[in-house]
Image (cartoon, rainbow, N blue to C red):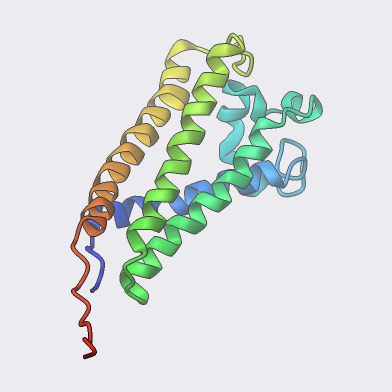
Length: 179
């Protein structure tokens, strides 16, 4: 039986994959991806994030802030699962597709939640004091709300599909009776 196709989930995974990979590669390529680095041209869009969130900044890099690289590795795992979902839905249909998508979205939701909680419990330790509140809203709060919302919706939808498939009765096995 082929897995159910959800256009909105597929679009979310397709649109977010390059964004996530760009973000993870920025962190994992530091210092070459940072201001003054020879590969900076590819990540020039990170100027704003370096100002807003110090884990992306030169300061965070030199202080060996470990959350960003750990999150970058997690991003690679999540994106691999999301792409496996797409593969198992469209390329080689498999009933395991919902499990891939559910797991990828769950990891993303968990990481986003941990990122927010870490900010709360450390007293906004990774946010620059130079930030304009509107920049924080646009570039930190709003994106986190979007990630949190979409991942939650994917978990609920695919979780229902998984639960439904687990609740189906097993086919009756034919038993041979011996006399």
